Length: 125
Length: 195
Image (cartoon, rainbow over all chains, first blue to last red; front, side, top):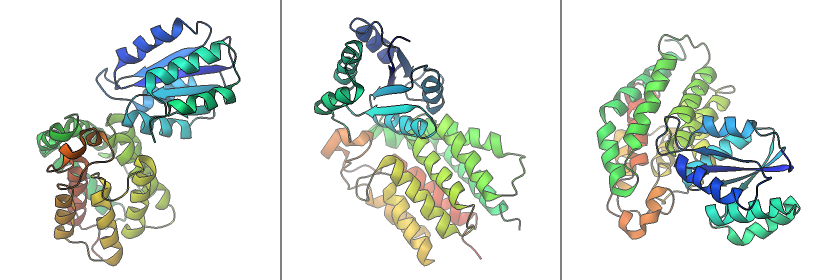
């Protein structure tokens, strides 16, 4: 852990989350990026247990979460309620938001300023 | 009758009905969603059954909490957090009350808090909302459930996976509303609301 804030990517498809990590690693090599993709049995979906476990595995105190579709958000919200970490749910377009967030974290921009910059990418309510 | 027994009978009966109608629920979901609502619910209720079969429950709150956590962990789709939140919310309310109307209202609040759907958006809330109101008035019948379910057919989805279809979601029963209708039909049949 070389930054104080990490990134969690939640997608319905394991490979989507892992593929996005490859993209982010290119611009944010020092930022911890973890994924919780797919359902428990490796199928399409999201898993509360997997999300909660991954969230707890971060050494970072602050975590930015980016996600794709509906159930990802609901499972994330439940996991956040049971976590003692400072978790920020980013309701941005998945790829654009995560890419922007990762780039700015790598550049050591203040998390509050990053949240402000991400607002223009918000597409989920 | 033991105070938890009729509730356990309800959930056991609900489990059977979901398993029986797994393909029907998948079919409804194929029309306007991702086609897995039946399979997801089937996996969830089987996990619930495995947990509660043979277990002793003195307190309703423990029963509802176990049901809720199993559904959250095992259902997989959006229904996991939605049904799970309903039962976890009922578990909290059951610490203060055993009244079906109070418990079911808490369940509805759990669903709404999680899914943020209002009535009329073609979701399970369109069954839960009128049913809970009827339970509060002591007037729940099968036709209340049937009418609520049928009303989702002509709605345009503005929440959930079906909302991506917009106008094309019209003309189909909402799968989450259908599984909720099974939940309340089995509630009636298990006699939970009887004195």
